[in-house]
Image: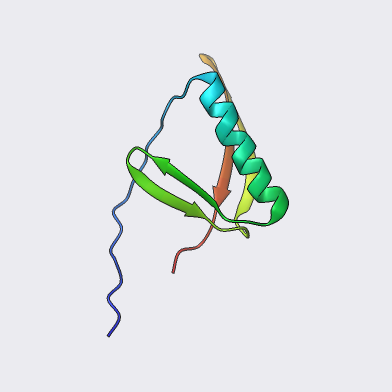
Length: 77
């Protein structure tokens, strides 16, 4: 009998220095371009983003400022 690992809900935001963020973006872009999965660790948890993940860009504006988010979404089994 297969035991499925129960995952807890999570909503984490991490800030990175510009150079470190740029390195992560370059690695991500290379994986997307070559159809490979992308591995990243966020706040101590390792995450694997599959090559078929849906990629989107979100822009939000409010009275206090603006925000752009690069998002990747995929289904888990």
